Image 1 (cartoon, helix red, strand yellow):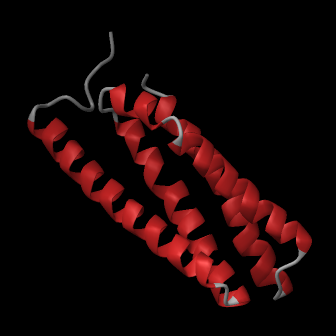
Image 2 (tube, helix red, strand yellow; image 1 turned 90 degrees about the vertical axis):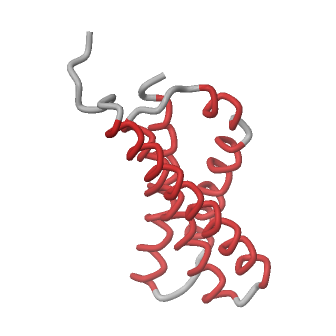
Amino acid sequence: DKLLPTLFILIAPPAVGFISFVKLTGEISEFSKILYYFGLFIILLLFAQINLFKKIKFYLSWWAYSFPIAAITIASILMFHETNIEMFKYLAWILFSVLNVVIILLLVKTTIAISKRQICIQEE
């Protein structure tokens, strides 16, 4: 259970790779599209498992949700700016909204866990 949220890390490499490739080459190529759509595929695959993620107890590993969602959000913003396709703008707004909800939830859960002294304790 503790390490299950780290599956979200799989979203980051294709998203960051897409961003880096586009910034280096200055254009959207077929390879960069493959990176971007692979990142979207992984995020859809993980969001389809939302019930599994909702069942696990809070651990600091939940923070692994934030960076990958931010990476795919930035990639979607870049995709919109490079292609001017409206779908990417809406997708970026949806992902940005999800990211904000996730970060607020993480802050609340972390604050509660700190107040209950449930984090940074020795494991059994």
